[in-house]
Length: 487
Image (cartoon, rainbow, N blue to C red):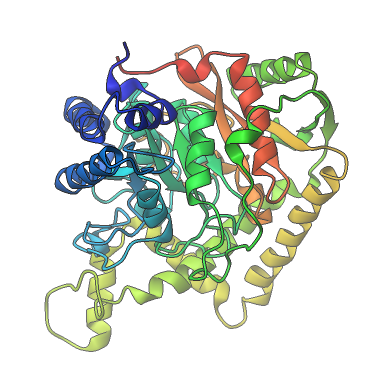
C-alpha cells in the first residue's frame, strides 16, 4: 500500500469520503513528510501545523456526520506565498512584507477551503513573483527535488517543488509569464495557467494585473483538473473575472485526441534549444499522432517581440502596483528620522530586492512623460499583434503543442547575475500570457542528466477542457507523471 503522502489528490479525497483514512491522518502524514524532506528542498516559508490540524478535524467531523466534505476532502495543499490567507503570514517572499498577516482570504484560498482542502504551508516564490528560478526570493532559495544543485524554476518554484517532493498533494501558483508552467517543467509535475479571467485574482498580491492568473500544480493531469474545478468561476470581488459557466474539467479527461488538430509553432523550436528537449517534445507529438490526432505546422510570427513586449508591460504595471509599499500603511517601515520622502526611500530600499528594484525603475521610466508612447503604448500595440497570431492559428487547429522552455533546470547561481539570460528562460511561455490564453505543462521525458522535460499545450480562450483532454490522453500513453525524485 502506498504511503499516504504518495496518494494522488483524487485518491486521498476518495479514501477520506469512504472513511478508509481520516483527514487528520493525511495531514499528519504531510507534516511528517515536510519534516523529512524540507531541509533539502526549501519549498515552504510558513508551515501551518496548528491551522491544518484544526481544519482536518473539522473535515473528519463532517464526514462522521454524513456530510459531503467537498471535492478535495482532507487533501493537504500548499499556496504560493503571494496568495492572502487570513491570520497566516503572507510575504510574497519579500522583506517588505516579511511580517504581514492578511485580515482576509484570497478567493482561491477560500474556495479550496470550501472544497475541503487542508492548507499545510505557504510556499516560496521569487519576490513579488518576479523571476524564473526562485532565486530572487528574499526569505530563502528553493532547490529542485530532482537535483538540489539545480533551480526549481520560478516564480512558483516552491509550489512545484513541494508537489514534486510529495510534501503536498497539490498546490496553487500564479503565472504572469510562465511562472506555473516553467517550474512544473523543471520539477516534473503538471502545472496549468488558466485563461485570464477564469480564476479570481482577488486577494492575490499583484505583480502585473493584466497578466497575473492563478492555477494548479499537481502530480498528474486528473489532480490538476480537480483543483481547477474547485477554484474556477466568477467572483464579484474581481472585476476581471469572467461570468462564463465552468464546465466539468474532470469529465473532459475522458475524451481522447482522435480527430483533434494540433499545431506545432515553428517559432517555438528556437536556435540553441537543448537537443533532449526538442527530441522529447517531438516524441510526444508522435505519441499523440498515434492516438489519432493530426499535427500540422503553424506560425506565430510576432513571437520574437514577446520578450521585449512582456518586460515593458509587466514592469510598468509592477511600478504602479508596488507604489503602495511605502512604509506608511502596512509592511516594512525602516527605522530612522527624517522627512516623509526619506522614510519612503529608506523603507523601499531596505524592503525590495535587486530584481524588484530593477523592474520598478524600468517600469517607471517606460511610463514617464516623453517615453510612454515610445515604450508602453508601443508594447500594448505589439501585444495585440501577438494575440492576433494566436487567433489566426486557432482558426485551423484546436490546440498548440510546444516545449515549455529551451532547456531543463539550470544550476543555482548560473544565471542570477545575468538578467537577460534569465529572462530568456520564459521565451516560450510569455506569449500566451500576453494573449490571455490557457496553457498546461506536463512531463514528457528526462534529459541525459535525469532532469524532467515539460511538454506545453496552449489552447483557445476558456478551452481548458480541451487542453486537459489532450494532456490526459498523452499521460495515459506514458509514465512520466508517475516518477518521483525523492523516495
